[in-house]
Image 1 (cartoon, rainbow, N blue to C red):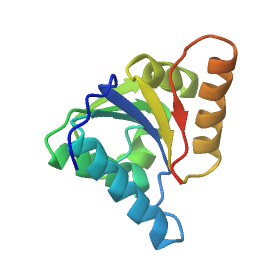
Image 2: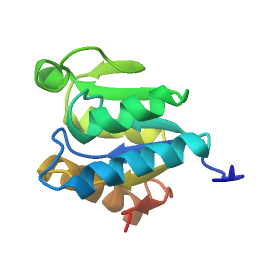
Image 3: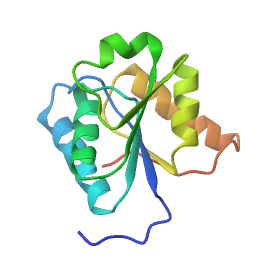
Length: 141
């Protein structure tokens, strides 16, 4: 794929800490990660090393792009198993996680996930509606 002259430098990806029940979820995560690398875009994500989060972060990091994970302290023992990828910053709680992810990104993409992913997505949509940010929010098809 050609490199784009995008105004975006860093993409925030919301996704699950599990891989889901369908191979298509994993395929979508890998495809997105490969697109980020080919377009020379950096990643901000929830910081987990497992599930779709781990898959996306590993692939983007392996492709030589910057990876920044934002992880609430209370989830570190649950969602960080094994080595961390890129830089992982510990924050106090889920609200601070979302605020930091938003602060460090130019746009948002949501992949399959659970209630946490849905909540993150709805919060950034609400922030856009309230004029807190004007960053694009996307759900890949």
